[in-house]
Amino acid sequence: MAAIRFEKVQKHFGRGQKRTHALSEINLEIHDREFLAIVGPSGCGKTTCLRLVAGFEMASAGIVSVAGKPVTEPGPDRAVVFQQFALFPWKTVRGNIDLGLRNKGIAAQERTKLVAEVLKLMNLETYAQAFPHRLSGGMQQRVAIARAYVLDPEVLLMDEPFGALDAQTRVVMQEELVRLARVRPRTVLFITHAVEEAVYLADRIAVMTRRPGRIKEIIDVKCMREAEKWDRFERIEDVMDLDSFVHLRTRIWKSLREEKDG
Ligand SMILES: Nc1ncnc2c1ncn2[C@@H]1O[C@H](COP(=O)(O)OP(=O)(O)O)[C@@H](O)[C@H]1O
Ligand SMILES: [Mg+2]
Image (cartoon, rainbow, N blue to C red; front, top):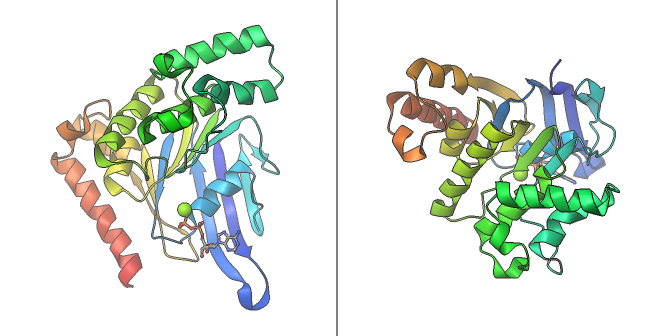
């Protein structure tokens, strides 16, 4: 069974003159514990895809399902990490991470244990009592990821999570995410503008057409990685000059450019 499935999914927004056809027909299966990245031109409907899986929007036609169940609303099996860190400024790092557990009605003692675990996992222990505004963008995003992970969701939905970070912090966070994927594998739907990021992180990459978006092609990065004997657990600078990496990057760039120019 697919972890996430889009079946003939369409999405329109608004009515009459203001009607926008965001998604034409999305067919896509994301496997259990797979890391799938979506890339596509701006406005092609990437965020809309993610919001459909999150249960923030409903499809106009077709079915989006998670673990075989059609999505009708948000749920604890899916956690979302946005580009804007969306932390509560009046709560400490610990408070922010604890909040979701509190809302789930988990007892205090258990919460303390789970929060401590995730603080350790994300190297955030020394920041537990800090307020978000004291933290760098990278640290804030680390807290946002911790907040998602602590709920132990099956599916992580990430919408350009590193898009607001500077280049160096971004690489650190990419490596961090890879490390997390190893110690706590989850199904990840990851949206990005950055082609290199997608090639480094993803098992497969779905390239979308311009709006109304559909899946134009799916590229199997994992297969290539295994054939060429490199791993996303290696540092990004150690793999980004390899022929296979460059080849994939160029291929995806060309595919995206066709959508811009066409
Ligand atoms: N709530 C909404 N109401 C009206 N139009 C929307 C809404 N959300 C998205 N759209 C439109 O749908 C299209 C796809 O948007 P989006 O999924 O955000 O694209 P992307 O994330 O690929 O940049 C865009 O034209 C956008 O303006
Ligand atoms: Mg978007």
